[in-house]
Amino acid sequence: MKRQTWFIMLGVLVAIVVVAGVAGYAWFQSLIAPKPLEISYATVQTLMPDGASCAGGNEDSPGVAKEILNLETDYIYVAGGTNPMPDDVWANYGFRIPLLKNSTRSLMFNGSCFFRSPNAPADCEGEACFSIDEIEGYTWLNLTQVTGQSCFPDASGCRADVVDPGYISVNTIAKCHRVVFDGPTIYELSDGKGNLYVMHATATGTPDLTATLPEGWTLTERTIDESLVLLPFGGGADCYYNVVRDNLVQSYHQYAYSGDTYPES
Image (cartoon, rainbow, N blue to C red; front, side, top):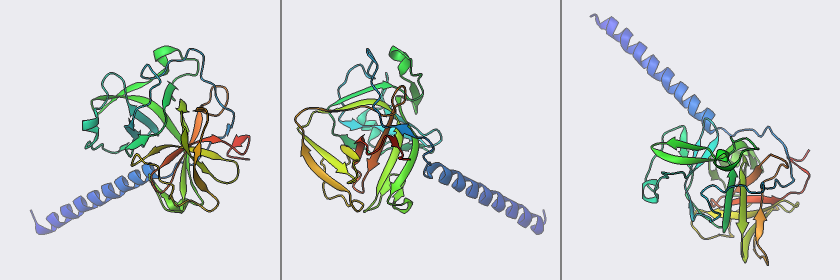
């Protein structure tokens, strides 16, 4: 075969590799790009149905959350079902795109009841309310779906699960979940406008009040005299939460709103 032919074949091969690389990079960027919030919901609590089952069969809160995100579907799964991933496997396990391992977090609430997967019908009963999928040889409970993302005070300070000092990220999620904080101490985030958030998880297991927040935001330690019970918002069959994250990988559930709808019109 002539040298010129070899050069042509090599050039074609290089072009194919470059095109595939560009396409792969574009696909990956599309997966990790922020998802615009296209829904709005009433800031009225959604009550848990009478007699609803709790995933796992009880309301005990796990100490560590083992969660994965499917970047293609925006579903978040938690280890559950009959064959959940053990802690020792989770510690060093690497998932492949489009699956992304959520940062390991120590949970701070005392009671937890997942009463419906986001892809289950609102009138479901019993085990039909929970969707269990097998992923990487283990069983996972379909827990949440991300419906929109934002970053405050502007979009430049948030990249995937990284939040720069002076910023907070907001994930609006569909999650039918009752959360109970027995206290007596909670850590409350406020934007100074009537919106309140309670810290539900940390990366280290120890709350840190030195997070660098946007102007006007405060993080304080507060004592409660009775349990703080969180329910999702939306009213009726809808289940939505706003989950905030600060620059220290501390996460919060919003539990008080300044307006009747979110986002405020």
